[in-house]
Image (cartoon, rainbow, N blue to C red):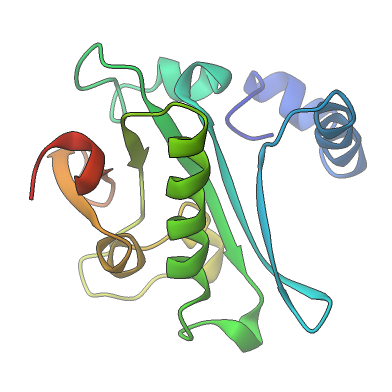
Length: 160
């Protein structure tokens, strides 16, 4: 819900309130993302929808639109600690691209975190990491912040 709500609203309903709001989206038939499972246990999450469904992203200076092309955005990736560095993020990103394509998307973007020394606290990697996006076929197309590139899936953007 971080990208969907004004910061004051997100803080007001932090925790359970935001979980309820996400459940309401799903109950209305929206597919806000994907879960990865291992033997019936959830181990990962990837949020993806059309960019216009994320008003906070639309207001971001560092992640401002590159052009006026309709875009789907990957805004959140989470993988349980014991499943990290095993390809779960890449698998989720590939599934997200397939889902977007099935729903008419021509362009998928992501906004992963990249640190200068390759390390950062897990809490700062909630938008994914550059290596996972690269492995899933994304390519950096813009960077307005030292730690936050804008990456596009190369199969949609025309870049190879």
